[in-house]
Image (cartoon, rainbow, N blue to C red; front, side):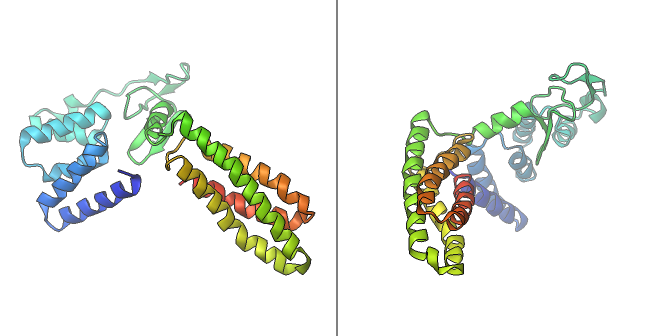
Length: 254
């Protein structure tokens, strides 16, 4: 299930809950959690729909396993089990950042619980996290294998050749028409870059890899630059390459 499908399911679940369709809302939330069982925001959204005390307690305990310092979940669990929230919440203490042992801090990563200073804390939609946990979360979206990346780079090389040849002929055909050639370069660059990006993405079966978009863009634009500048129209070719590079990188980062 891709990210867009998950976003749509979350919207449908919230609408169902708001309109009182509890059964459908729970069904949608369960579909989401089957794909992303550690999505704390979804679990907390679903809690008001859960009537079974034992099931609700299990969900809250699961949230605290993921984020030990989630105040809302801690308070809800304490209220559910009859414990005092004061006893449930740890005392404030001076800690030392696990990356910078000499720096005092009162912050903790809300997932792993490690002490972090302000330089090591990353603000996320679910609170402050350490860079290691953020990277671990991001890694779930990077599913491309080395073979996928190799295919993608080969396609980036081919795309660079095609892009360079296209710009070469663009300059040769329209270079003598002045402003028209600049307009053509400005408007044709983005679709050319986007087309190459789509070729690369399809060769990788739309899987992602960390930093791949940057390296593939460098390869493609580097090859295209060498070929297109042979046309002699440096300014027109440069404008086309610039607009194509922006579209290429943006599309590969989707």
